[in-house]
Length: 132
Image 1 (tube, rainbow, N blue to C red):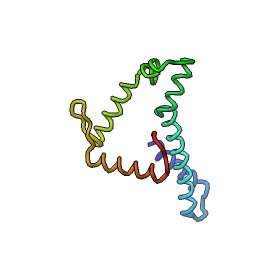
Image 2 (cartoon, rainbow, N blue to C red):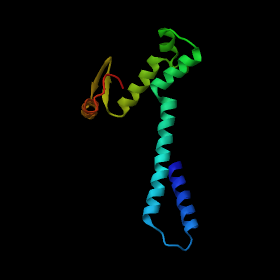
Image 3 (cartoon, helix red, strand yellow):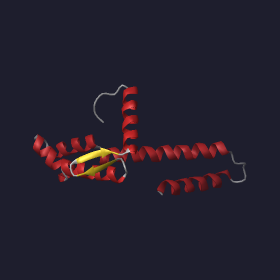
Image 4 (cartoon, rainbow, N blue to C red):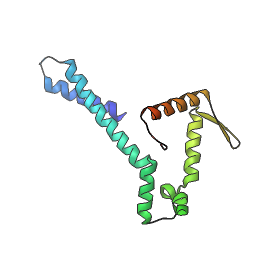
């Protein structure tokens, strides 16, 4: 919502600054594109800081000064813990239709299988090793 509001404000300022001069669509598109890239960059940065697994792990260990494996897994994300974090992610992915959970068994849906296959192909294309 704030992106659209920012875009409207930018557009109004642009029109006000132009006054009676003719408008150029490429100026509008380039201005909105810059605004879009700034918003996307901000969102990506906030995602990495607030929800990124590795950043959360580093932040937790920093807060504890040093930590054992048990402390890290039980106190992950300021006390949420690894088990709860995985439960939340699994629930979100299940709600998204990527797999089903029956008892202790997780099975990919056709949609999940397509996404898994594409992800592996993309990682292979980029020559990425194991990991996220």
